[in-house]
Amino acid sequence: MDYQLLPSTDDPYLVFYMPASPDGHAFQAKVELRYLPAPGKWFLSISDAITGEVYVNQIPVICSYEVLNDLLYPFRWLFQGSGIGSFFCVKGTDQPSSPDPGRHNLKEFILLWGDQWKEALRET
Image (cartoon, rainbow, N blue to C red; front, side, top):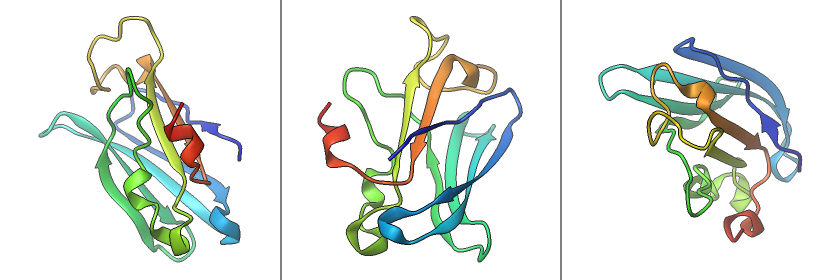
């Protein structure tokens, strides 16, 4: 599995389309990152771009620090236990201006998404 580095900007709504194939279940993934001002956080959604089926709906994007945190780990039951993939948010600078991405500092973090869930990544 290859991880995709998701480009980030100051736009509060980002959409990426990419092919995905968790456990051979091929589909065109629509990956959305959305900033919601009321909670002051970024949220991640993943759906099938063709059918519109939503697999992950607005989970908060939180940064991994000491332990690598796969934000899609709770969704590993999808696709007969193969999961929807893995998503990681890690700091991209030594001292980000906030612990988690905020409205104007998403570029201070690295966002990685891969379409296969791997237990080994959780242990590194």
